[in-house]
Length: 149
Ligand code: THU
Image 1: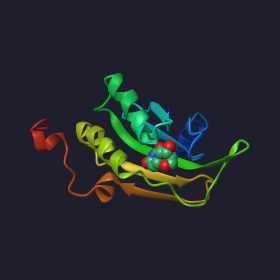
Image 2 (image 1 turned 90 degrees about the vertical axis):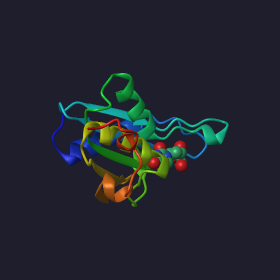
Image 3 (image 1 turned 90 degrees about the horizontal axis):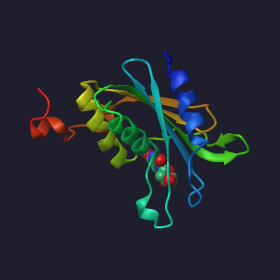
């Protein structure tokens, strides 16, 4: 259970420690807050065939979809940076890539929430929060296929 932006960022930071990112050396964690207060996390999973890399947000959304919770999303936090011992370096907030914005939109539309996305820097000094509609305006999603009343 969690109830603050800081808790959600802390969960994303813990997830980043489980990234498999030997090629970029850039560890990203995503934490999805569900409507019932539960938190589901994901981290990036890279591949020797670089283009097959899965981003942290994508692995986290896949987890909730597979559990039947795609319509339960409330809020998201993302943290990324280069590991340095147990810490993450980097003072700029990590923004979700374009593909991840679209993947988050699937869950957000299904959840009927214009979710807040908290983007945090690795070193924890900077956080910027956005509505998903700011990050992905005029989105194409399930509503365009008549899937949402
Ligand atoms: N990455 C994410 O996990 N999420 C994003 O939204 C941006 C990028 C990962 C992919 C790759 O493993 C590493 O960050 C460097 O691009």
